[in-house]
Image 1 (tube, rainbow, N blue to C red):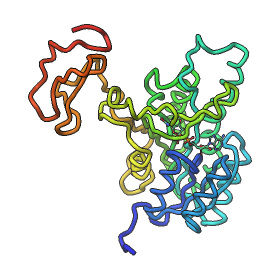
Image 2: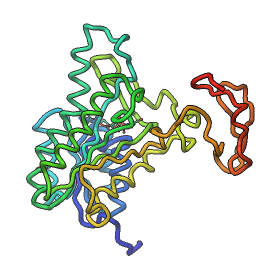
Image 3: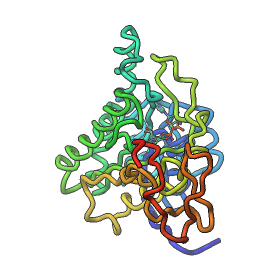
Image 4: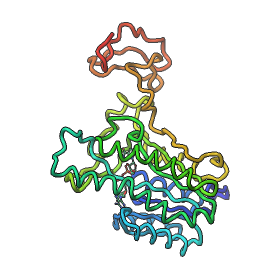
Length: 310
Ligand SMILES: NC(=O)c1ccc[n+]([C@@H]2O[C@H](COP(=O)([O-])OP(=O)(O)OC[C@H]3O[C@@H](n4cnc5c(N)ncnc54)[C@H](O)[C@@H]3O)[C@@H](O)[C@H]2O)c1
């Protein structure tokens, strides 16, 4: 066994939505970094799997982030089992499958709004409230999973996008309110092939984002040329939870999305993809316009597929 110390040795961390997807990747990584973890999730089956893998390093709580009771119970169980709480991560969320307002049925809109905002916004608010006394005691930190949809349109429909924009405001307001004892920060990941579901109110609770196979198309819309894995996102959470490396960080949100904010309107000038891989422009019947590390592209001959200008 390695004697190397992890970056989160002796920290106790609570993760909501930690039984699957991104949350599960955070749990696995945090355990590797030496933390003990409380996992609050509504999926009893997935929680069993977490407990099986991590044994006494985790305590699991089956509950709903929309209720005060579940959030309070999760904090209490962490403290009962591990004697403290250093970091709480509000990560559980649901998506609206980019349903545009024009396509919403009026009859369902009310309930869909309530459901998405209750999970995505009220959940983090309740967790912050439940965890605050313990976080003040430990001079710890609070972290929120946001999304590229917290900054840009078209990462969801209006309900999801508004809910994630609201979280940017929540991070900033709580960073102000909890200072100086507790640091509050956010991570805004881009697309991930997970089991992310939609609201019951829209009949989307059995639909999984994984079924969209976004990663197969990612090279055309993610500047880094592919969709990051859930594991690759986990390091940002380690950074913000680290008292040593992230001591100056509060009220910060890290855009951690493969570069979605720097997509531009056409191919990148360097034309790079993976070393040696031919670069093709979607919609141009496979025309090779350059290779990574190769000569600069003749951009003036490449028709922009987004704006149809040349
Ligand atoms: N998958 C993506 O493309 C993507 C992109 C950007 C941001 N995100 C965000 O990442 C976070 C995690 O999503 P994911 O992709 O890992 O999804 P996921 O569905 O794989 O994991 C989410 C977990 O949260 C749990 N959960 C959902 N609602 C809950 C509730 N009311 N109470 C308790 N637990 C609940 C689920 O059971 C599940 O285990 C979400 O906030 C999501 O908005 C996801």
